[in-house]
Amino acid sequence: MANYSNADLIEATGIVQRVTPWIMAASSVKTSDAAVSFRFEINDIIAHASGYLEDGTLTIRVLVVMAAARLLGATLNSMGEVRQAAESENAVSLLAQLIRFMFIVMALTQESVIVANMTFRSRDDAGVAQAAMMVEFDNAAELAADALQADPYMKIITLQARVSKLFADLHRTLPRIVNYQFAKIFPVTVIAQKLYQDPSRAQEIIDENHIVHPAFAPMSIKALSV
Image (cartoon, rainbow, N blue to C red; front, side):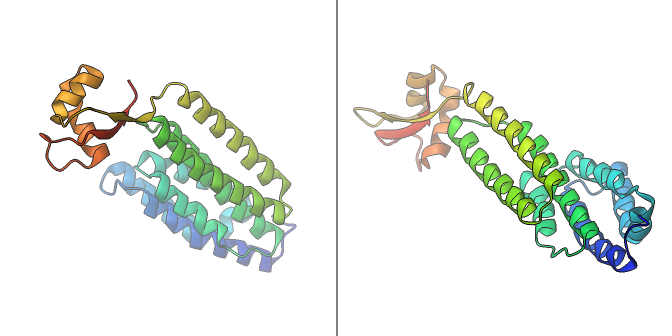
C-alpha cells in the first residue's frame, strides 16, 4: 500500500470500521463456538483495519467473515444492509473507493448465494425476489459506473447475469399462482382434494386467501396451479 498516502489510509480505514459491524449484525446465530470466533474476527478487523490495508490481507479477511455471516444465518435482508452501508459511504480517494466496492461486491455475492439456496413456492414468489435483486444489482452497477470503477462494474454485471439465469431456470420448474372459480362454497379440505387430490394442502389455500373459517372457502380463490 506504499502508493497511498496517510490520508487515503485514514479514509479507507474509516469505511472498514463503519461497514464491518454490519457484517456482525447480519448473522442470526449468536451463541455457538463459530459465532464467538466470528465476532472475534470482526472485532480484529475493526481494530487492525489500517494494518490489514497496508499488508494487503484485508480483502481475504473480509471475504472470510462475509461467508461466515451467511453460514451463521444472515438473510437476504440483513446481508443487503451490509451492502447498503457500503453504498452510503462517500468515498473520495481511490483506495477508499476500492474498499467501498469491495464490500458492495462481496455482499452481493453472498446475497446471490443466499437466494440460490432459497425455496420458492411459486413463480410469483420467485419473480418478486428476482425483481428486487435486479434493482439492487442495477443500483450497484450504476454506482460503480459513476465512480469509474471498471473492475467492480464488470463483477457486478457478471454476477447479475448469473443470478438472472438462475431465476430463469427456476421459473421453468415452479407452478404459478392462478385463480380458480367454484360453483358454490366448499370447505377448504374439499378444495384441496379437488385441486391436488391432497386434503392436507388445505392450509396453504387458507394462507394464500386469508380464509377466516376453513369450512367456508370463497367461491373464487387463488392457489398454485395443478
